[in-house]
Image (cartoon, rainbow, N blue to C red; front, side, top):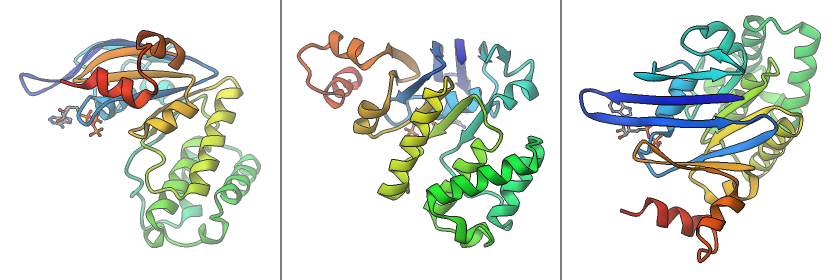
Length: 240
Ligand SMILES: Nc1ncnc2c1ncn2[C@@H]1O[C@H](COP(=O)(O)OP(=O)(O)OP(=O)(O)O)[C@@H](O)[C@H]1O
């Protein structure tokens, strides 16, 4: 579970990227984070994952403060960023083992995990190759595996379907559902509203740094009884 408690982030004197945001990501559910370009999604993720420090407010991950207890809080989550181009000179298997070592995942457990997930994503054959030689989608699959190697209870993904082929995208959505159904939490951002509509148990909508809505799709639709789908509601809520 993540608690976002009156978070504000400014860039410079007057660029308010996130303004007094209050919301929660519950266990046992998939939460979709949606909003137009520049709304504040990535800035929020950067604060949740300790890349940026909020100017005000606090963020608790399973009750641990990301600013005051960064190591303990970071152990709680796995993060898939929107740029999978890191550790390019390592082989896929070396990177996975490196992260497994950092999180102290026992070798037998990690081997079982790597075999299962590489098989689900169809990348067993390339794990011995350098990441530099991977396509964007292959790098993304490797990032997804790295994020899950220590079985985190919270899984955060920034635009995770970008660059994945339909089969991998289908598999990822299945993994996200399995994660939530096992009582853990999933938070992901997307611009693809059909995905949010099909996959999410709740959505959080942000626009110009302000949280406009948090709740189930049914709750959202009941606020806009005349609109037929999430896309129409989104256009109405974000239109200026
Ligand atoms: N390092 C920075 N310096 C100055 N302004 C920034 C910085 N990072 C983000 N911003 C501004 O903060 C606002 C929120 O940006 P953010 O990247 O969080 O949006 P986003 O919702 O992730 O957008 P997108 O959907 O386009 O990825 C934007 O106005 C952006 O220009």
